[in-house]
Image (cartoon, rainbow, N blue to C red; front, top):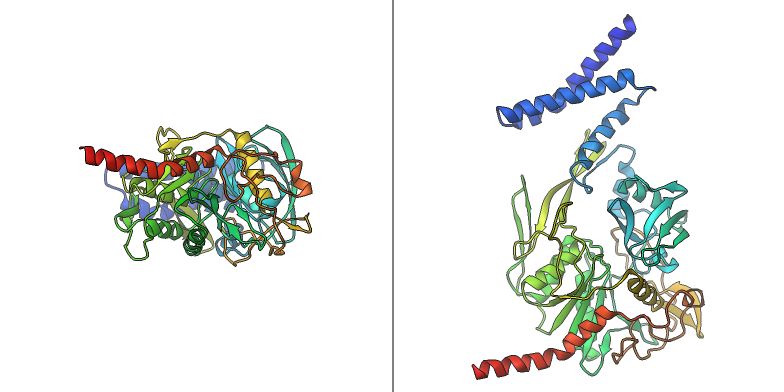
Length: 496
C-alpha cells in the first residue's frame, strides 16, 4: 500500500513538474483551441511518463526518460534539430571549439544512411581512401542501422592519436571496405589549385591558350575568402583570363565566409537572407568595397555541395555573375541555433530559420520537395564511378615525392584554421610533387588531377590511369567559347 502511494505521489510530482515546465508555452499559446491542445499534450506526456515508470519491465532512469522524450520531440521536427544531454555537452563544446580529434570527414544522413558528404582534403580519411558518397555500415563493430547522426559523430571523434575502425560501402561499386584511422586535429587550407610545381606551389591554369584557371574551395572558414583572393592574384600572374570556381564536394562551413566570397564578385544587392517563424528576417547585402574586376566565371557544383557552398553558387547565379554547371546541390539550407537548458547543463539545437537566395528561392530540401538547392544552368551528370576516379586522382595529386618515390602522405598545409569536423593534419615535407603533364581531358597547361606521372605506389593501383573529369572539361569549353559569344552579342546588337 505504501509503495503504491509513493508511485502515485511520484507520478503526480512528475506531472506537476511537466506542467510547470510547459507554463511559458501555455501562457504564450493563444486562447481557445491552441491553449487546449497545449494542456492536452502536457497531460498526455504526463500519463505516458507515469505508465513507463510504473509498468516498464525494468526500472527506468528518470533523467534518461525525459532526455529521450525531448530527443524524440526534436527529431520529429527535422534531422538537424537535436537534444544535447549533460553527458554529451562537453564533447559538443569541443566540437564548437575545435579541440578534439576527428577522422576528417563531413558526414550527413540521407535516405536513412549515415554517409560521407565529403572527406576533408589533407585529412586522414582523405589520405586513406574514404570517398564522397561512402555509406557507413559499421563503426567500431556496431551496425549503423537506426543509428542517429549525432551518435555516429560521437563514435568517430575522440582524443587525437586514438584509432577508430569503421566499415563503409563505396557508392561507385557497392564494395565494402574497412578502415582503421588515427584521429587527428586537422588544420587544412580550404583553397587549392589543380597541381603543384617543383616548389610545391599551386598551379591554377588548366588551359594556357585560353587563360582558364581553376580554383577549388573545399570548405568555408573565416580565412577562406582571403586565401581565395590571394589564389586569384597568383592565377592572374600565371595568365588567368577566366575562372572555374570548383565547389564540388564542399560540405559548407562558416556562413560569413560564404557571404564574403559572394561579396568578392558582386558589388551590390542581396547575397542571402534568413527567415524564421519568430526571428526577424536578416538580410546580408553585397558592398562595392573590395569587389574584384570582372572576368568570366563558371561555378562547379554537385550533389555533395551543401550549405555555404550552395549560398555562394546560388547567389552568383541569381546575380548573373557566373554560370553554374554540374548537378543539383544537396539542399541544406536551414539555420540551427543552440539554446541552453537546465541552467546550462544541457542544450538544444533547434532549426529556427531557412536560407533564401536573392531570387527568393529557399535552398532547403524537405522530404516532399520537388525543388531544392541550386539547379545548374548547364547540367552535366557524372556517375559515382566517375566521381570516385576523379576523387582518387585528386587525392593522388596531393602526394609529395622524394627522389621520385612517394612518402605516402598528402601535402598538408598547416594554417591553424578550424574545420567543421574539427580534425587536424600535419605539415607536408615540401618535396617535389608529380611533374606536370598533358591533362587527360585534352586541355593544355598544367596537369589536371589524374594526369600521368609518378603517383604513390600505395595508391596508384587504386587510381585509374586517366580520370576524365567531364564537368571540368565542359566548364573549360564554356570559357573557351566566351570571347566568341561576346563578339556574337556585339554583332547582334549592331545589327538591331
